[in-house]
Length: 309
Image (cartoon, rainbow, N blue to C red; front, side, top):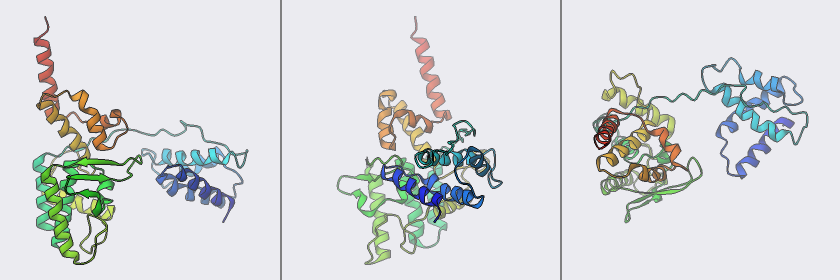
């Protein structure tokens, strides 16, 4: 083990002990220190960091270069206490494009089409039921995909109809009240899952046909197949993603609030809490100007103009 490798492991362990997840850094720093060892570097320099960040395996228009350099920057700051010769790459050397991909806002009919496709084409009954129920939960809860995949069988309070989400993106836990129809659908799936597994206890709520926890890469591929087979978004310039259910949930909630005449601004903290955001400003990222919202805004503007003296 080289000094760079040893220090990188110490840095990651230290930051994680403070609560940081460092998923990018945990994957990228071993590659960076291997690069330093391969070129015989004695210390971290801006030149070497840039050279590694811009290796031919990265494409300039993406965030890859900036994310690589960001991981190096944190490690370099740590290394200044170990080696005063360490150079810390300053911010701004790499542009991090923050262009927002336009999300696909699913309609209730499109959610139903995807669920029907799962039930009719995915083969083994448990696999079909798993994806049918998983898609339904994503659509009606706005949960992150990772949160749903990490859901444990003990995370649902059946008597109260409340789902507990453990430490998620920001290390925050929360409880989500569910509509009775959602609780019933989850209970039906749990019964089918338990019949399939017989006496084997399922730790994960959603499981594969083999009874093992679902893997994100498999879920993503299967979902893409369902989108293609169902015809959802056929002819649309926007490619649907499984994460877009979260966007659709936020937009549909806002539409419902506008239609029931409530104070939407006052309710925004509710939506932020339900989605697991620290502040409402993070929730606005998920709001898209779909035709229904634009129509509501136009009606309100027209009404406001009519009451002016």
